[in-house]
Length: 111
Image (cartoon, rainbow, N blue to C red):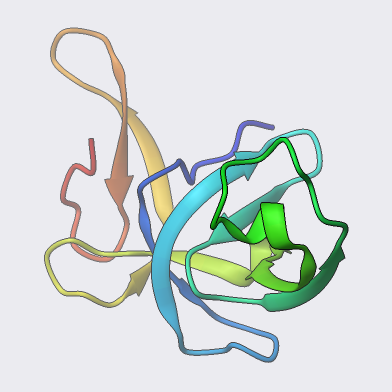
């Protein structure tokens, strides 16, 4: 089944420790049904110093680095562009035959 959430979508987390927080989708992993949302599910990662990285970046220094972790796609909902409320996503055909995503709450076309 194809995911109906894509990169750069505004989503709201509907379950888990970050419930109610909104953010932009940074990346999508369709094979594992997971998405990475900006500023949500912050995890600490112990990183070894990397001398070949650019000087001054966290990768060159190493230590404990905070970054976003992936969350399951079922735990996020797309934000309706018209009402700014969480909405389900449907797929319909446009006049020229392309498949387009539609917000179920308002019926507005997403892309």
